[in-house]
Length: 68
Image 1 (cartoon, rainbow, N blue to C red):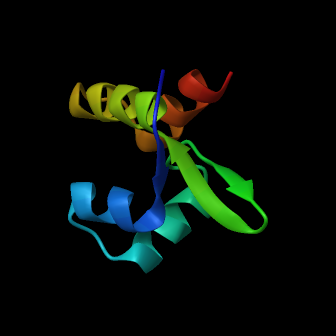
Image 2: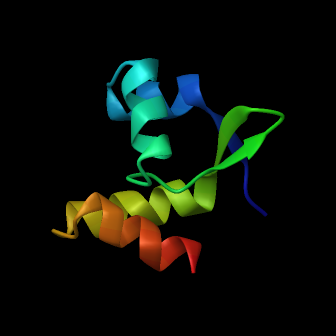
């Protein structure tokens, strides 16, 4: 089972501002989905994205792989 992360949690883990994470989600640089207008990220998708980006994939490519 996976956990659902909120923007603050993702921002903290990436050491970024919440506004930056929002922009990354809107630009499909991070895998996420909206619930009543607020972004959410599955923890398993986030962990996979970190692995891919950490291995040299572009954020958009990593997101596309995860979200398909």
